[in-house]
Length: 251
Image (cartoon, rainbow, N blue to C red; front, side, top):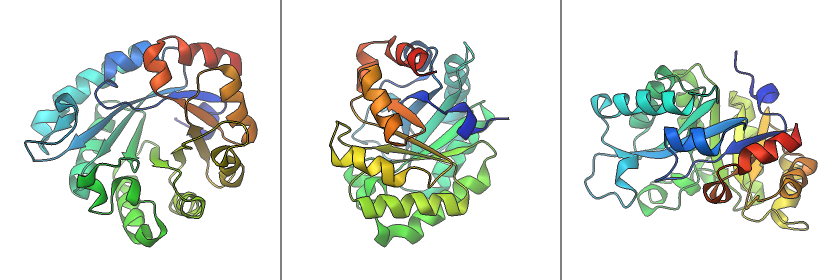
């Protein structure tokens, strides 16, 4: 049984990367890491979503279920645990997609509360969802996802305001969401982002944090600040062996 606190401890997570993070990409760029996140996928009925077209799906299982089966299997081919990340303006469409991801074999599912796209922020979603004034909406969305799946749920968020992030992590712990993945925006020594890790640490079952991690020293700095695991995005796109190399040094 998947146990995030155990399985991700001192782990390297390949972060989602829209337009790139499909199954084969995850298998290649997250080899020997703790987890790969596919997506983020957008579920929307529109015809002109400003996002890579092959990562946008109509809210129709007949359209996305075959894709999920193929790509989750590809991502997991070498035994790598896989998470599927999604976002939509409609809660039901998000839930249905993430349920299908679990049924396709995903080990985790994730809601993207990180996007700055106008189609989401105007609905108090994306990076707006984790502001304190939207706490009831965040609770509604994450509780619905948590109730619909049996695999561990991840909330992907971004550090805009520390008080908002503290409230978000406390809320996730209260409703039983085990993993919060936060983009620190700046994780350099002495940065506000790195300082925030120490205040967020220990408030949820598993805190994954990252921003511009390129070396073992970068990763250790975030773990030493209190994070349970680190996430690597763009740097792993440039170096397919990076996640595995850093993971080997951390465990």
